[in-house]
Image (cartoon, rainbow, N blue to C red):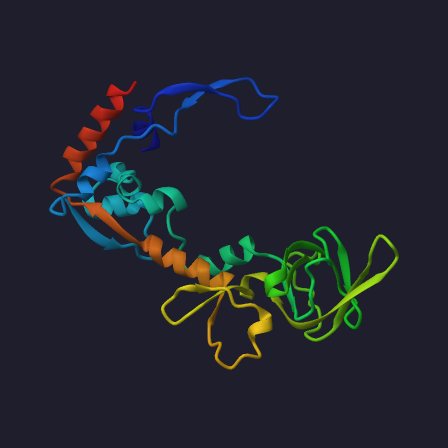
Length: 252
């Protein structure tokens, strides 16, 4: 299935690693704009929502009676071509946890000049320690690797965390929240879905009513967007596939 598609691509020498010998491999950046041309003519395609369990090959068989046209879904849909096939609903949470496996702690204290990335911090009441992976000062967030697999050792919600800096001074911050990284806030939006620059220090303002969007929310939203694709009509898929093959061959 894959071979019949990629044999239309030019072969170039490519080195898979600094110490590896160069080998012939397909030029994956090679591309022709057949899909873009088709999208300008809505009589050639239908809209489709990818269902849980749909794979490119099984969807090709469902629509065209053969698995050979699986690649047309990527040709016709730039967002799928760039981000990949959507994840099945029952696998999505595990995938999200895998992408964002750490803990996120949140504080109202100013951490802009303290708590550098790479620093080990310790919770004074929980005794939990971890290494700072990422710092987001305007949201008062520290993403911390506690060294567990997955990171399930929690800090206490309102404890104080601390570390000793290079001058021997103890730097501290008081937590107001602690959570899995995938459940922590990525950004805030208004009711129209527009990103807002809300920080923790705005929470005392009653006029602020922005909506928190977590990392998990973002993954789920993007996955839903990936499910919305266009597919070639059965009556047109052979002609478009032949046109694609002809144009690709002309570029060799």
